[in-house]
Image (cartoon, rainbow, N blue to C red; front, side, top):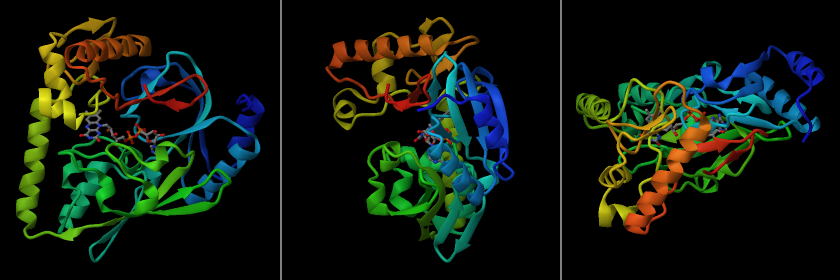
Length: 317
Ligand SMILES: Cc1cc2nc3c(=O)[nH]c(=O)nc-3n(C[C@H](O)[C@H](O)[C@H](O)COP(=O)(O)OP(=O)(O)OC[C@H]3O[C@@H](n4cnc5c(N)ncnc54)[C@H](O)[C@@H]3O)c2cc1C
């Protein structure tokens, strides 16, 4: 990979209407409010622009990564020399045809859940409180109540590294618990097809969504920056000892902090930034939680958020 030079940045500015920002502070921009500076962050505004961008990145062998709302990403404290491709509100078109929804990847997940409910369609109401984009949700096969968005997906369209559109059917997406093939690929998700079921009662569904939101706002920390659940719930551990939050709490760790990172006093499976946390603080806290729980239960918990290193590579923690 080549470094992202100032001439590469100038060339990026010439790609159609691409919006280009340089030296972006991830400590200000990211959801966990942690990280160094991103050399360059671009916001494509159309499919054509995204394809041209992918082609340019590939021809110039530039390091790059795709981001949505950064609610599942921990950025290193070092500066990150890569092209950040942000898929957001310019990709938020949603269409309904019978019980099929076609949605662009930048749509806000709670907005999509509401759109489905208003269209009288059931299946994705469990995603109504997840503060990310549809693209991020697909990559993570995110959801709640042990469900995943993948259950309702018929296809995913991406911009491949060569700047060409690719299409994956449900089977090709290889959805697993909080995982999908897209965690292994370097492609930009553009559009998603979802098949839902007609709901028996819109009113009941609305009430169910409100109850999900109420229960989340009671359980989860809302004020301080965080990236949701730190550890994925393992069914075998759950059966023997309970969910990660309970096990961490019973290990006496709730409320503990390293630097500016704290195990939330509200929910022990959340790490909150109490002011000036660094990625190093968060990683140390994660390792400590994982070791304590391993010693107590014999289960090595899997971390849900991914780490972004100084080369812009997204890795498991
Ligand atoms: C308060 C809180 C509560 C949460 N609750 C839940 C929950 O109940 N269930 C759950 O599953 N998650 C939950 N999360 C985690 C997170 O919101 C989800 O994983 C979400 O789907 C991530 O979306 P994002 O847009 O923020 O993605 P990002 O964090 O920006 O990215 C996540 C991954 O997706 C990739 N990506 C993003 N967009 C694209 C795209 N268009 N094309 C290709 N790759 C892309 C990134 O490269 C990265 O690998 C929670 C987070 C918070 C802060």
